[in-house]
Image (spheres, rainbow, N blue to C red):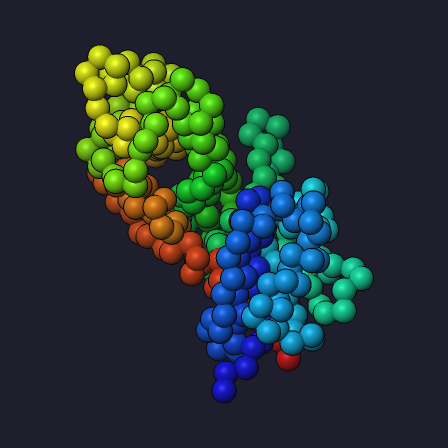
Length: 304
């Protein structure tokens, strides 16, 4: 019978993911919910975690390793930051133990870029990078990590050199729900309009300064020429993603290969976007990379 070695948790702003991991790194059980930092701050981090530990029958002395927003200033226990240029190995050295708990619960730190011209922070993505590249990366890479707050990371031998955050996912939610464009999306189903999406990516990549105009055209095009709400949704998404790619690809060589760390719909959308721009990508599943990163950290912390 496979025996649990530790519990791995990725605790985001709006999402919670937990895996019961065996000694070989395999997943024995999994839990997902919308009890992210915002919810847990009100209901109690320890109560949320314990409910999921009970659901997977985690024994009382099983250690727990957490990455993400549980370590933010507004989270459970502030875990601080490792400053860039940041060795990925330093993440393992700066874990913070949650006080007052009967079991060993630790939170991994985030990464801070203390550059007054480009200040930035990340929490959770550093663990995905650890899973994707290991403790001591041997090669350089340009990494795209889509999400509510997308990260673009320059990895150089040994760790993270620089990174930039784009509020692409959050902007999509704001534009789609809280502007006049919400009327254009009314009644949209799950069907994808790949042609509308890729055309919007290309238009925004070619002229990102016109992005606000391109977005309003979603509304005017539908009023004047009709069109399905799914096309409107994909045009908004493509425009915002195209803006992001325009910023990060502007100074890069045309033949640069991107490491894309993503899962689900975001993996598909960004894959389509890069394809529309003829930019080669090497995809890595985000769920796999975060589990692998947490396992690597857990092995280093609790190796016997």
